[in-house]
Amino acid sequence: MSGTDMPLEQLLGYLETLANQSLALWDVPEGATARLINVSENATYLVQAPNGYKAILRVHRENYHSHRAIECELAWLEALDEEKVVTTPGYFVGKNGDPIQEGRVNGLDDPRYMVLFHFVEGSAPDESGDMSDGYEELGAIAARCHNHVLNWQKPDDFERLTWDSDTVFGAAPTWGNWRDAPEVDATVKPVLEQVEQTIRERLGAFGKAPDRFNLIHADMRLANLLTDGHGTRLIDFDDCGWGWFLYDFAAAISFIEDDPRIPDLKAAWVRGYRSVRTMSDTEEAEIDTFVMLRRMALLAWIGSHIEAPEPQELAPGFAATTARLGQAWMDRIG
Image (cartoon, rainbow, N blue to C red):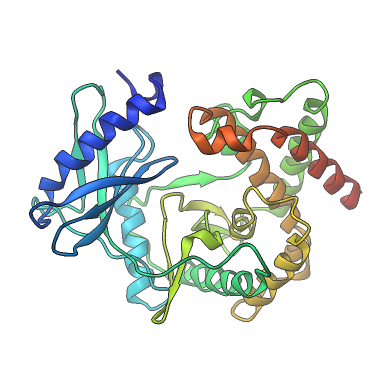
């Protein structure tokens, strides 16, 4: 059976079996076990052994990324670290010489790709108080990554997802159609249709010049920064792909777009970004368009992932708040 056709609890039972039986594909210590710590696009496991060994196992969602696409993610992650742009997690190579392993488990029709990452010490910045310092650092890291991709010789046949108007709103949207999300009813749908049209028009005019649209992390939130006495590390490159540089700010405020602190956080992010890389006033003025693009993508994501706990928790009121934010944005831009 496909993983998309069964209850999440049943799927996670199969994936836990797969994760634990697959540890033998790497040279891990005897007695190592895998315990689920997060489920989103992928299932992520903490691998521990009695001797103190720790690692992070990512079991990929079925039919989401190809083997080549995951290779390209790891290539960028490695290049950023080697060129000292930002510290990223290393990964273990399997016994067959490939860092990307493939495994099957009875009960699931399709194989799953897996990557075993080094365990990264540190904690994410506190998101309960003033987050300005964290966002200033996020902005600076984003700018360094953007500078890097403009000069990085990407591997041949470079393959990653694209985050643009077509993959959010087109005929085959990556995260589904926002119209299918919970609570998209007659009270909010007309506004959201107008929001989509406005985004399409503005991003069409903004264009895709390489110094605006290139390889991005696409999920650079505070939760994906880990800090300790040795510095800051950037993790979770699973969504990295082709997109507008300014989308990295939009991703940074995922799910909290209506927080009253957002104007201050945006100012801090822009300040950090400009400490590293030029951002024109025209580009700064367009940031909120990317915020709305991301918000609409998240609405679609909630609808297409509603079997998981996080989307279920987020769903109530999300469509109405998206419409309210969208109307306020359209009113501002005139």
